[in-house]
Image (cartoon, rainbow, N blue to C red; front, side, top):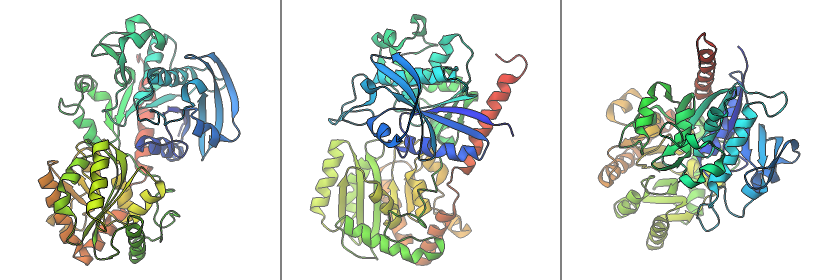
Length: 489
């Protein structure tokens, strides 16, 4: 099996910097690919948190004046990851997060910040560094999407390119006036270039110029080719349908494993599910909920937004909580939702507990202690929360969309009879369907034998990166074989 050398580029990576599932994918996939004969180096921005975590880093190349200030490329290893780091303090060393300041507003120079990352990726991919020239450049989401455009317009030999859409809703759209600062030629501003509804579309450029396009579930790959879910890009995606493939995400079993997880109150596996009760008690205590092992405890770990369907939960709360049903919610996002859930906790002491923000320890405890994990998204490319829930024996209650549809087997009568159910799904995404499905889950929860079967099915489901990594490796090798074929461009 011939080794494949891949340069990945991402704007965040676990455990160095994380705002969402993209970081988990970027952090876990390289190790899984190694087993398939794929070596990965990942280029990431030199945020302050990243530089602090690196320890010893080698200076590999001085980029000089680069997008408005001095920059260099560093080489480092951290958390079992082989990394290139774009050290450009004027772009990445900020008081806030990776994309926005402490006030929640996007940085006004995000176009330049992530164009620089993409430009650095394209330069490395074309041999900037001695003795390193990858076979594949694999870019993730809009922040890295211009790499494919830089390669295409360079006129120089380039590696094969793969672009992964983690969420089509985030597109990186900027005014036409930014084009000269990006260093792209004037003729790139065209319908078959980077132009997108009169502006510059970063994500659109990745879709236009990458050799292959992947997204993080088969159902989401189909959904985004429709006008309803394509967000203005469905036409381009349909035109490139033969190059689009959906590959489900996995979870890092080194981190998400209830048998070895140091973040939870009691460790357990499918043969010792009774120990899980200690985590439920701890979760109730952390959220100020009434201590009762018989209560039906709903857990939510989510960005609070319309996409995630959390407004449905807020509307349905009077029908959901009480009557021996509790809610523990961890998340942040839209201020009206934050305020609404905070007020609900105030009005329902002991039954509703809310923590605004994100805490990795509590996120693990939520999976280990809640009876169900709720994911009522209106659209969901893949979702990792429901995969963590399966691993930890918390039955997922999910909308039947995107990757949620692909990963959860509904506990309908036939699935229960066949012994294959792993959770609960509902469609359409309405308050009535959502409440009806929660009531269905509560009813099954009362049947302890069937509930243990449901938990066991989930915990035994393979949600690792093994199969997805094999799919990616096959995609890489197929792409390289196609490029090597006689007559290939």
